[in-house]
Length: 457
Image (cartoon, rainbow, N blue to C red):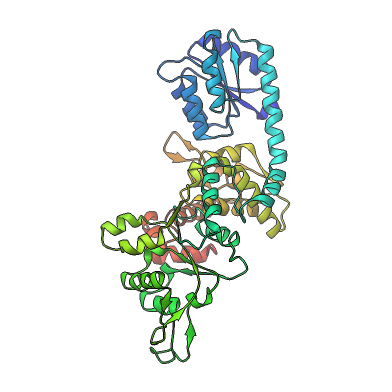
């Protein structure tokens, strides 16, 4: 157990660092040392660190400051504060901020060993029980939402309270944060849950067809309208209408939707009869609608109709506590789907994911874990199963050599590296091939060829 457990010692007194480091090395622990908080953060950013012993008083940054920054980097790192007897109040403050424990100086090495044993036992218990806790949580969560984050808990509380009403809800957040998942959770928790939830992606339909898609059309109202067709609004009668990517609705359609929301009436395209339906409207966007209003590309009155209750979804980088839970969920999901015996993720691989910012949010994490499950050779996902672009940088500039992470011939390794670069470019550009090709320095035709060559959808 010890050889896989790494400890970072942070103290501005070299004698203290060397003494504690020597003791831990004799005990079989992998150790790192730092003279100040900045050095410690640099080490923790490039290495897998399980536990940190840090002095409280050190130069410009205290051990408390280091604790807060380490928890932002990776909330799973355990931090022990070392403090003189006269500053125990500071140690208590650090405990409230998430420190694992504290030691008073002079350091009792027996206490150090006890703390280390407890921390290792806790890590193994957490790993063994995480999957079980995840399953238990699924029985009590808001329809499919997996979270352990206080920030996300506030968001879910707002969503749950809004579910009982007919009031319009606007969900805003970055791409991949789970806006449709929240919309479905609100619908399932509402009195309309037995009725349909009808979804329309406003960005995927041209302006000419969007009105007909929403409100339906009469026979002969335009070329190709060979029969009467009800719209999504009628299909959602009694239930919920979810307008995804609402920021992409053209201004003329915004006017017609506004009238519908104000009076509850609409007409099919080409029709004269006024129809009424009873729907609950939920909309979502990753765009800044207030900025669009200032640019005159989004109607202010329409915005206020949509934005009665506003739910802001935090990006995954602000709720890192959820990463281990989500990883366990996705491992089970894709191991079952692909009939693989993958059960968990290694500590090194988890540490790498905890430090990553996830520009593609939960969707990107899911893609990474699906890929890792498929490529994994045994029951535990290793760092080498993760995309090369996630691997820590060597000498601060270039990624680690493909030879270190890929097997097979030279050609196999080059192709695997190229696939990773393409996959990352697509994720970072919301799977827009034009933008991804530009980011890679390719033309679209070349990118499409490579997608076909590697069987990438």
